[in-house]
Image (cartoon, rainbow over all chains, first blue to last red; front, side, top):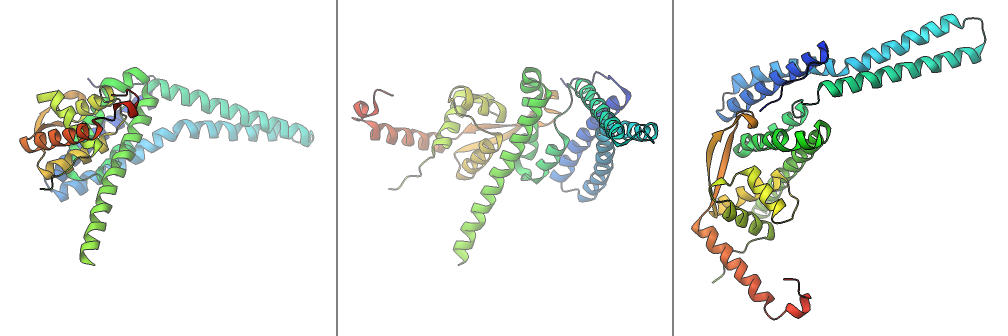
Amino acid sequence: MRAQPSGCGKSMSRLNEVRNISSEAFSVLLLCARRRKWGYCMQILGALCRLYLVWLFLCLLPLAIAFGVGVALAWLAMWLSHGKGDRWMYLTIGVSCLAGMVCGVILRRHADRANKTGSPPLTAQYLLLLVPPKYRENLVGDLEEEYWTRLSPAYGRRWAALWYWWQVVAAFGHFLLRLLTGLAAAWRLIR
Amino acid sequence: MRHASLGKFEQLVLLALLRLGDNAYGVSIRREIEETGKQRTSFGAVYTTLDRMEAKGYVKSWTGEATPERGGRAKRYFKITAAGAATLRRSIAVAQQMTKGLEPMLGGAR
């Protein structure tokens, strides 16, 4: 059922690859945590942290390229406008910043198009580790099923990701509230 | 004798379990509450309610099969117990008893 990335660019297909590997590693991590294999959990967590850094780098790549283009153009503008007055210099710097921004927007759109059928938000999946282990696997499975079968095809990746985030925050809030209520009741009994 | 009472959301979840029969798991329960009960809810609310009612003995659960669209993760099926059904019946009866004779005041909203 899991849709394959369309592969509109090398970095985007790598990004999707990293996401898929992270998703699988996350499943194994949940399994190990359930069976209380803490040594394996630590190893997988280490690997996930490294993967997360790679993912972050690939995500920030369009922004970094846009920034680089902007800076390069600004330097070029300053070099060209040397000795032609301040107004000319400010104008060329402004134009080069605008060009950098346009470049960033184009790259961001390209990234979104390439990742239209991407996985659920990885950070939100990590947050689910904070949910009590009893229903964690079922909750993650339910969220993923709803994401792939209903929301992503009907509303698109962005809305589906937003919905996923909302569900994770709501789940975390509910379990936290329940924990706090239990603690408050225990505290009243002790006092 | 003092009977245990059910909250509104607990009633909705138990009714959804009754309607779904053997196919009651997280996604289908939430969908049933949203589509039939016309109430927006989150998976977190459904699971915390089910967990609480399982502790009270109103529902029982078991792990089902894993499917590819769930990323290979297993489903957890839920079923209402006899104690749960009795409590639900009592809770609905109390609500019906309380609304008896109030139809004109409720403006025909039944």
